[in-house]
Length: 85
Image (tube, rainbow, N blue to C red):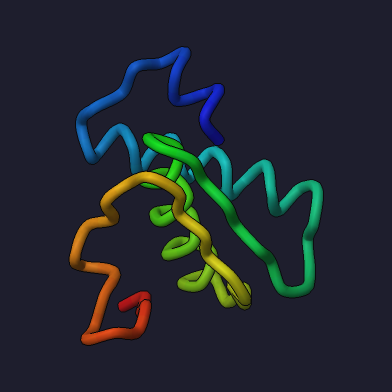
């Protein structure tokens, strides 16, 4: 997910969420069913976190979310567990 983010230079969280939505749509087209594993590096980690949240809201099972070298907003955390409200 890093390449698209680098090209757009998006910093506004609303635009980041919109871009994550595009990734979820693409992912759904490639892998329409089954559990998913998402990995994001640096700024792409934010997109990955938003994509995981949206995927889970749509009923997809996110078996692993890996964010590398990036802070993920606290909205995704509850104590020591990753949650998607």
